[in-house]
Amino acid sequence: MLTTKYILCHGSGNRFLMLDAVREPALERLAEHPELVARLCREVGRTDGLLLTVRVGEEYGMRMMNTDGSEAEMCGNGIRCVARQAQEYVGQSDRFDLFSGGKRHAIRREEPIFGSIPTYCVAIGISLSTPDFVPSMGRKEGFVGEVIEALDPTLKFTYLNLGNPHLVAAVDRIDLERLSALGEKVKSLQELLPHGTNVSFYRPLGNQRIYTATYERGVGLTASCGTAMTACSTAASLLGYCRHDEPITVLNSGGRVRCLSMRSDEGLITTLSGNATYEGEGEMALDLERESYELIGDLRPYDDERAEYDLFLKTIQAEKL
Image (cartoon, rainbow, N blue to C red; front, side):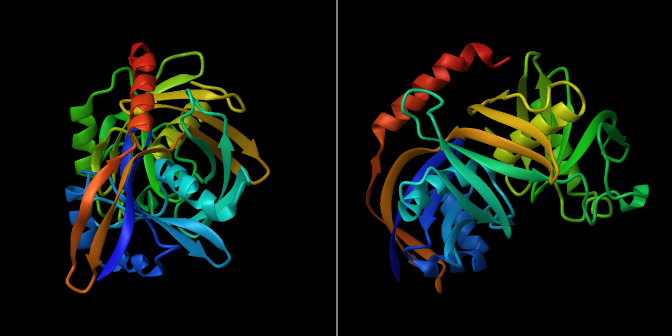
């Protein structure tokens, strides 16, 4: 039996259960117990995933499990929360690196997006190529603004690899039922998408602003997905809806972030800046062998942080189109 502290947190409304595997390395074994992970996500705060802050050699990183217990390669909202927890290990530095899915990501603490809300920026390298997407179409890269007949004969998708896969399409109206149907349909396209993919719609609003919604692989429709917002911003820049090298305001049902898509000698890099909010903390006892857990005492809420984020949401309601 392992007793540990847990934190309920969120990035842009994308809610997580976060555990510190730097302090308790045995917690990394949770990745071997997907059914327990799924129960924890479902029963402890009804979260969108489980985050582990981990040690990677002499540095630090993130492991993220979806609500079905599968492990995600990257999570743009989650890594901001992990950055906040990891900062107690890296010290006062406002710039440090975190690993996720075997990739190094530059992290920067920024001025709050609103009030005193803790705000972090992550730089995400983006590829247009993949070893397993569209082989039947005769190429492995450059799939920007094109129709995938098997998925939808009218939408024009852009494929982006951010460590995890994304298909995103510009639309005039966000239709969540249609988005959910596409996310489910992906599961039946094993020959085309053997590892699945996240699917997003984004609506260009003009003046470097977009609104996004995502069906997240392994989760379903979510209030927010950080890598999806990053992917949509990048696609919008590639297709001319937004401009490279200028900040893009990204809205979704969970809040607002800022992205910046850049072309560099290393390829496409897009930064994602947004909140890392703690909702509360508590203790639990975990028995990995029996795949069971028990909460110890009550959750201690972070009322001030919750209230400040609620106020932030109220200030942007008029922007949610």
